[in-house]
Image (tube, rainbow, N blue to C red; front, side, top):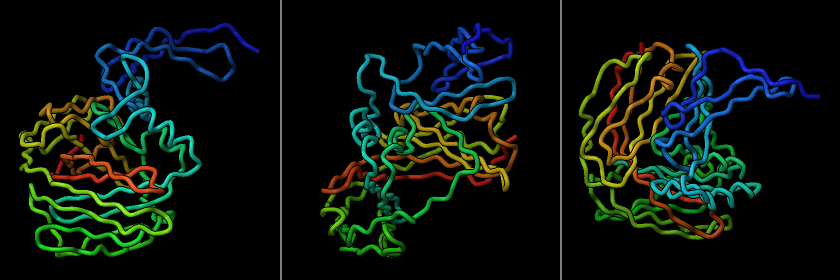
Length: 315
């Protein structure tokens, strides 16, 4: 049974990739218990497979949603992450996907191989498109319970070869003596086993000294917050992130931006969701390099140079 639609006067703002969208209607949908919001995607909204969407009504902030946007139509694309709509559709159609990721910084390297439900890739595996920010309340700890052993992993650089330790099933860690100078070349090799084939990838840590050029000790939660940097590797990604609060309420926010822009503004629609707190703020320069192996649904090595500001007041 349907009923006549009726708009409501409650203030409502919708932000798509931080850009305020035009709301032409919000109210009942004509179906009991179902509300409806009609929104026009702003022409200046950024494109990608997981563009953030946030609703703001007074001081109340919604959870962060995602929206694929492709101005020309067809497949969405996030080239900085090596992701496109065809890839996501193929992975999300599978019941489970074996996913592998290495994280590499000057301090060392680690890797995680795990089986992930295919439907999770409808959200790009947790990566947001450039220009988008995400808020997660009480983020769940990363679990290794579905980890997959993929054989022996070794890193090789000019100093020799370094076998990785297996901390838990599917969780790999480089030895303490393996460190990578900025700009240095190295490779990662996996022997493979019954679960996945062998792989090898050659990499170079960005030859950059990332500088956070407006490091600030305070973030006002009632206004936009701009962050600037220099020295980031061209064509790479910047990640701005923080975990604020304390139990029982912990909130994590993460933004992704083009490193070439040299600056990013965290919008008030995101900051309004954070509790007042003193905590940290991390700026990372990331480069995503894909690798492949038989039996592996998706594999990436993420090269990272970080700057951490550990004493920031959010108020």
